[in-house]
Amino acid sequence: MGADREFKQVCVAADVEEGAYAEFDVGGRSVLVCKWQGNFFAVENECSHAKNPLCGGRMRRGSIVCPLHGARFNIRTGAAEGPPATLPIETFEVKVEDEKVCVAVKERKVTAGSTFLPPGSLPTESA
Ligand code: FES
Image (cartoon, rainbow, N blue to C red; front, side, top):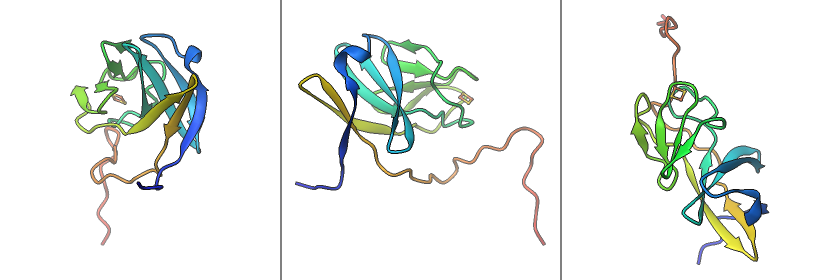
């Protein structure tokens, strides 16, 4: 058994309604705790497309939709299921004990190719 992850209580089960989510700060990271079909899931609150917060987007059938450009992500796997995002978002383990919802948040990882450049801001060549 590894002790490489630490679960932190973020709320109680009644704080998140079925088919909805709530935003929490967990160890300095913004996390959305989602409830779908009676189960809890946790995802990072950051779209992989242009780093916009996902909070404010709609949750539908196990997915969350980015409110900025409409990318859709599976809340179980983090997979990008709709454009314009192609990269997944991070997901976190969740456990519920005595109605306490606990999330194991990992340190932020840097993903190659995840840098977003807004239109008109092409990278400059350094001589
Ligand atoms: S920032 Fe989320 S789809 Fe563009």
